[in-house]
Image 1 (cartoon, rainbow, N blue to C red):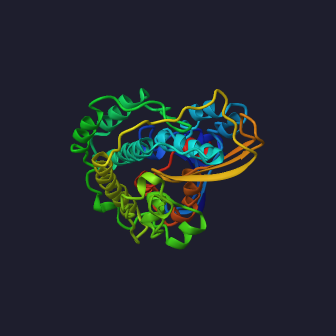
Image 2: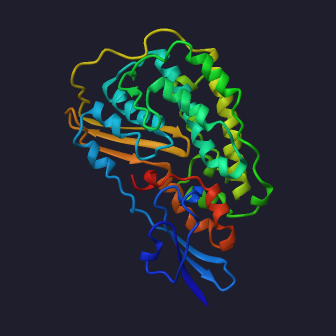
Length: 354
């Protein structure tokens, strides 16, 4: 006999036979997370379907009625753990449409802040799994630079809002010396295996994809100017299980610490933004930009009719593609192992429903 099980907030309203509550503080419940599972008598999952749309934020339609400066204030909110990277993706789209040449110091600081954002995001998911420490310290230096704790709103079209405070780089070095991502528990080995072919079929990117052997990282494969001299070498594993995913997150934290140090060593002087007209209008046409966000490829397709608001601004968010892969990796998993498997599979629900 098989029964249908619902997981996550509001699961009892899905017409299921039984509800499994993983608890509001578990990383697998990062937002209104819903799964419909088919389970055998021996409590082994035979089918899984992630249900999206419950936390729909309407970001893409909101962009269309705001000018480009205002769009940036919303672009960081669908993935609250990758705020800086999401702002950057939109700013890059407008800059390329208008042919802006961003100052070198702004380009270097953008890379440094992206890597700090990556460290902070990974530590959020690692803390309950590995005992990772010092996320708050990393978040504090991001807050000091931008003035925002979660929604940084520090990118501007043409660069950054302002330069970082005096002495900030020294404080960043001090914080980086304390970051400890912990060690992945060996008990995760063999759980929730996602094969490389399945990962490619679902368009899985980021550390989840690289844990399954997908050797793709935009910091190496299509680098922004600030990344071109950093020699980024993606962390790739072949096992595709929960242990590989957590190890990828741990190793990427250490890699980002090293990249941030290199940015600090080679930080140029000069301005961090361009003088812009009162109203920014992208020329008629379209462009696609992408960045390596903490959870994978964050893309922006901007279509303009030459007005001060976008005609269409479509988001390609990593969590939306990645979460679909749960239908491939959860069958064969025991219900008792579900929290560990979902905890290793980092997604942000706002980024799914955007």
